[in-house]
Image (cartoon, rainbow over all chains, first blue to last red):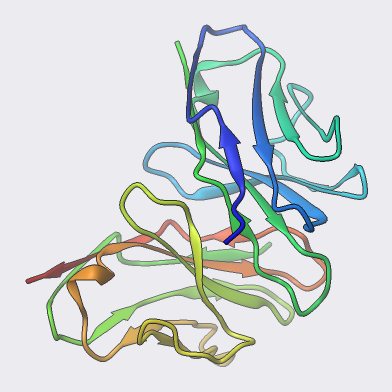
Amino acid sequence: EPEVTQTPSHQVTQMGQEVILRCVPISNHLYFYWYRQILGQKVEFLVSFYNNEISEKSEIFDDQFSVERPDGSNFTLKIRSTKLEDSAMYFCASRHQGRGNTEAFFGQGTRLTVV
Amino acid sequence: AQRVTQPEKLLSVFKGAPVELKCNYSYSGSPELFWYVQYSRQRLQLLLRHISRESIKGFTADLNKGETSFHLKKPFAQEEDSAMYYCALRGAGSYQLTFGKGTKLSVIP
C-alpha cells in the first residue's frame, strides 16, 4: 500500500538555524499538507499546497515558514530561523484530487527539537 | 471559526465493554467529519468518515447535526483498540482538517 514518507524521523537543530523537513507524498496525489503537533497539544494545520501554490495557510504559518515542491516528487517545509517554540512533531499529508477522495494520508512525522 | 472538542483526555475500559469516544464540533455550515487513529509508534490513519457511513474494525460514528456531535462507538472493546483517537472536521470548500485534542483509549485485559 502506498505511503507518505517523511525524512528525517528526528531532527535536532540549534535555535536560529534553518531546517528543511522533507516529504514524499503518494505519487498520484495532488493536494499536500503540513501539520504540526507540539507535545501534549492538538494536531494543528499549517499549510496546504495545490497546483504549485499555497491554497490555504494558518496563522502559525508566518514568514519564517515556506513550502515548495522542487522536483515534482518531494514536498518540503522550510523554517528559516528556528525558535524554541518550533519544537514539535511535523506531519506531512497528501490527498488525491476529487470530491469523493477526501481522505488525507499522513506520514510518520518528523520530530523537530530546537535547542 | 471551526472547533472540535474531545472532552476526554483518557478513557479506560475493560475488554469486552462498550466504548464511546465523544466528539463535539462547532461549525456554521455542513462539515465533513472524520475519526483518525494513531496506534503506538505508528502514523495517523483514517478510521472512518461520516459520508461513508461505514463500520471499520467494529467502530461506527453517526453525525448528529442537532447535537453537533460525531461520537465514536464500539459495542465490545478489544485490546488492540488501545490507541489515540482524534476527531477531525473539514469545512465546506476548505482544504484543512481541524483536529480535536485526542482521546487516549486504553483497553484493560
